[in-house]
Image (tube, rainbow, N blue to C red; front, side, top):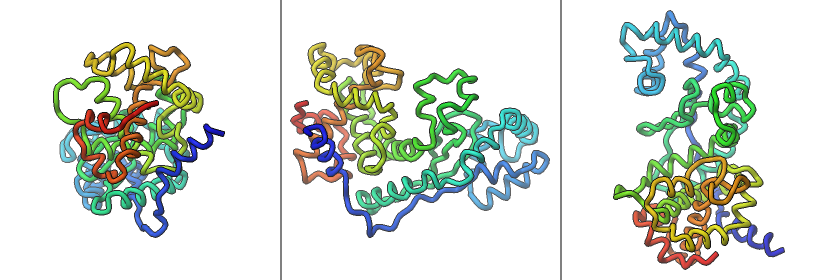
Amino acid sequence: MLSLFVISCQQTMFNVDVSNIEADVDINRFDIEFDSISPTNIYYGLNSLKEKYGDFPEFYTEAILRLGNIESASLMSAYQDFSNYCIVNGIFDDVINQFPDLECIQKQFSDGAKHYKYYFPQDSLPKIFTIVSGFQESIFPTDGIVAISLDKYLGSDYPTYQNLGIENYKRRKMIPAMIPADYFKVIAYLNYPKKETSTPDLLNEMVYEGRVQYFLNCMLPDMPDSIRWGYSDIQYRWVETYEEEIWDYLVDKKLLFDKNPITVRNFTGEGPFTNAFGNNSAPGCATYCGYKIVCSFMKNNPNVSLKELMEITDMTYINSKARYNP
């Protein structure tokens, strides 16, 4: 009963009324339009897309696919190689089969946009362009635009991922449901980057990453916790259960102010688990304590808005005012 009460309080903390807010994210299915271009018609096709989408086709072909300049003589040959690679691996076909439309994630994007406008009424969200990147990065941000590689969200059991040697813990997050979470996480990183100082210690990193998770809770309060965190259900239950033990370990081992990049990465970075706590633990588990520090800070400083929280550059200030006690 106590557990249910705590969960209920956490959910209430992020529930705000957005029923009267009209907002959405502008999503462009660039992947479909790009796939319709014939290799022999690449110059005309790209210039037509440029008229419609401005500089994005150039960003896509040059910065993402690295096919060369949109006007270069070698572009046709480079595009033919990319097209053949996609045909052999069935990438565009698999993307269309998985995402004939974006209905499966549209509601999450719409809800996220409404919450974003609630907390940041003067700001706007970047447009989304869906692309196929040939299994490169999942997200490519540029000015006012976020490109999302749909070929990186084809499902954890998608055979090509294993053939490419992608680790299990990464494949688990390569599912359609992760797209809105990854998008809004990028928004947090872009708008509120880390303070450019010397190498951060573990406490700074865990509070910064915990604040990003707090931001996600505000944007996507109805999304399952495990999806927001990129954890399995078991891993999320583990980190909830062992929060106090994680914190006590970090304090007892005097790790909070450790600046060793390996230490910081082990306790806040991606991975199959956190080395110090064994194979059944959640990866980057110190970030969960960082998130709870932020929750405690906001609870004890009720006049601080989400925008004001995100604008704080000194993570030690958040910790000092949080009165965190797991």
